[in-house]
Amino acid sequence: MRFLDQQFKHLVPYVPGEQNATEKIIKLNTNENPYDPPQAVIEAAKDAAQTLSRYSDPTCKEVIVPLAKHLKVAPENIFLGNGSDEILSFLFQGFMEKGVQFPDITYGFYRVYSDLFHLTATEIPLRDDLSIELADYQGTETVVIANPNAPTGIALHPEVIGAFASQHPERLIIVDEAYSDFSDVSMVPYLSKHPNVLVVGTFSKSRHLAGGRLGYAVGASEIINDLNTLKFSHNPYSVNAMTLACGAASLASQDYVDESTQKIIDTRTWTIQALRELAFDVTDSQGNFVFAQHATIAGEKLFLALKEKHILVRWFNQPRIANYLRISIGTQSEMEQLIQVLKEEVQP
Image (cartoon, rainbow, N blue to C red; front, side, top):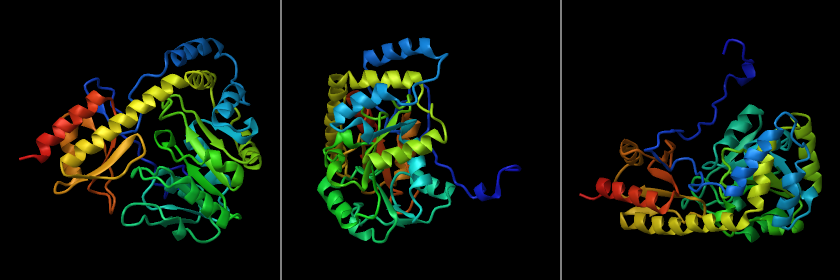
């Protein structure tokens, strides 16, 4: 800290989920896709490696054009970045002059970016059932919500968000849809009616590219142009050539992506039922994870017991959710092993 500016010494950085390369670990703590990328993505990465002596295309058209077609929007309505985290960084840096509001229990980077850019940030408490109530978001600040929310997995219907956006046309509403492909709640089809709504998405979850770092934003061309101004003032080549090739190949492999996504949804349904049979209270998650607390056993105790059995899940030592575990959906076999270990812990 000797040379760090005083203005940054207060920062509390985001803490990622534990990364463990041990083959014996069942990794259910970072909401990654448990299935391999499409073979076309792997081949595209190999081919793109031959071009690494050249800069990547800063316009990112290789991905933007097919992504626009997939989302049924115009290319000028899409922005690409180095993961959705980079896009969120630009948004917090450049679109929060009047401050920002977001839930008190949500993606941790919202607080980190607020502190990093010295923003006036207000955390709005979730309701007792851990749901977001947009009526609580009064004022003129930019609003950021994850939908489905993380770590709860609970989602708002797009019409609810649209109604709120219509009531507050002077406010920017950012909807972080990292997990929307595992639900039916995307705001993208409604964006033409709500120019003050911006959707942020990622290729990390349903598209198997967490390690590739590719994110996107969808919204009015005016907002997209402003995002490009920030990007080209920071790093026009932030999306590398291999990632662009992989993103394009993923979009060309939609059948495989849809099949993998459906397997995760089916396994999520099975897991929720199995947990409830073991006396867990489980939210109605629409993400690629579940959020559960046991009726009598503390979350930390279960977290440590699972880790001892080489199963990693996420435990948040925070008020209101300290007894919950966020459990990523793995393969069916992995989730069956999880349930077996939990049975041994919770049943006498």
